[in-house]
View 1 (tube, rainbow, N blue to C red):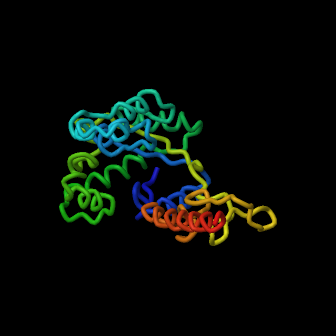
View 2 (cartoon, helix red, strand yellow):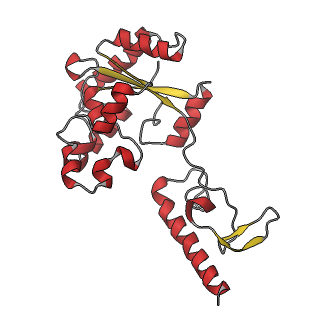
View 3 (cartoon, rainbow, N blue to C red):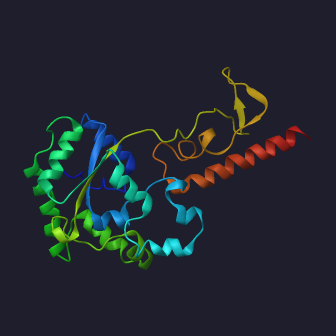
Length: 241
């Protein structure tokens, strides 16, 4: 029932966050938020969950600022087995323990953590790292209108209901799988090039774990993909004369 240590917040150091969670002996964490937060800040990955972006609709994108909870997010909130919605914190924590199958969370401890966070909102010079980051993000107009909720106290009923989401850890992508040489030839089990077979991008490990190392930043993936694709193209061109 404690907040993750700094800077292990959503959008920061994901790798360190995963390591910390796994060190607790559990393969999930809880995300507690409010209705105001979920309608602006809860994002779903996948093209099918973001029809406004995949449909290239500026009207729908701008609608995120005024239309309330996005449809796909609302569907998860109402029907997702890992989503709990309650107006009362005690009932919320009770359902969280029920979903976990054992009374791991103490409602008094959870309340102390949330109230301590809420009290920091009264200080415009708060050193709470998460609130400072939120205020910093809202300095940009686009984030203030579409991606971030106005800072508010979570235990104020006017901002509710409260929502708890169990976040399970899973493997989403491997960022590799095929071993290649510097010309992007795919290598067989003996380490020899397979004639006519090349690999580029994430399948060859250059999406993240290759040239950028273990703790690669997702925004840097494109460079490695272009590099390996260029190497594959040059090698293939040379092979066919």
